[in-house]
Length: 329
Image (cartoon, rainbow, N blue to C red; front, side):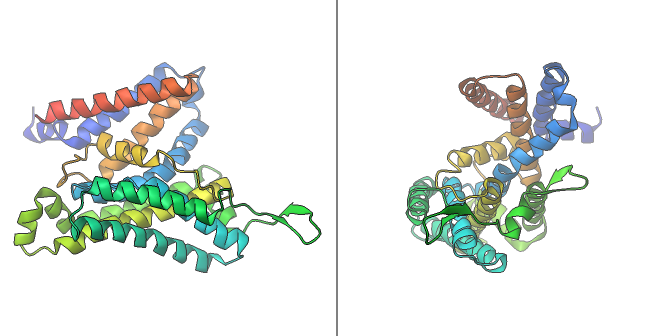
């Protein structure tokens, strides 16, 4: 075999594509009376993976540094509640609400990064604490209930006020109804993450820190700033996901996003980016997101119960990771 072809088939991207192809083949076999072959099914997959995929973009940046961010699901919920509160309750325009929520997410992420890089606390511990804190703050802001456009006037009569234009915009479809705006936001986040990792000094520094923190420090890399920026960007992407989630649900739910951090980690890992850091990229994460999305869709089409789908998804993810490790050995 040609050495270049041999190198390609041994690469993480080839293994990630093989996992995706396997799931697609299973979908073609168990197509549920042709449902898998309908374009609407693939539209739904793209839409359903978009919010988790946005989280996975930020998670990729953190995992490249050999870290992990368990707080992204809770930051998503906090962002959704904050965005709904600013937009639906206080009537703030999108030009005010969106930057404020993005700044909130980035600030929480930066605080995580500072605790990891400056205080030298394990990322697992820091982001676990942030996960609990952000969830509690979301519930505090929402007063333990969903933030909606439903209001009660002075006479005691309740009614739903019109949704702000930003909600309608994010929940619409373009290109003849083929692609959701949220999917385009996800692809834009993928492009931004790729640009950071492949075309900037920060990207090279992220890989250096993940490869060896001490070697990167001795080489002059500002490791504390780099790690802090990685987590700040993760919080930033979580805030974007929260805004999209609020628009899709037309409300801010403090209970939303539970377990999303695990989905984001799974997308990164099943794509082939190693948890030890120093390697990988967002292209692999995109393939991992599609793999998870199609796996969930195939199981859903074939009417697997939720608990069975969760068990099978966990087993397949573990098998895919073991397969990748075995091929890499």
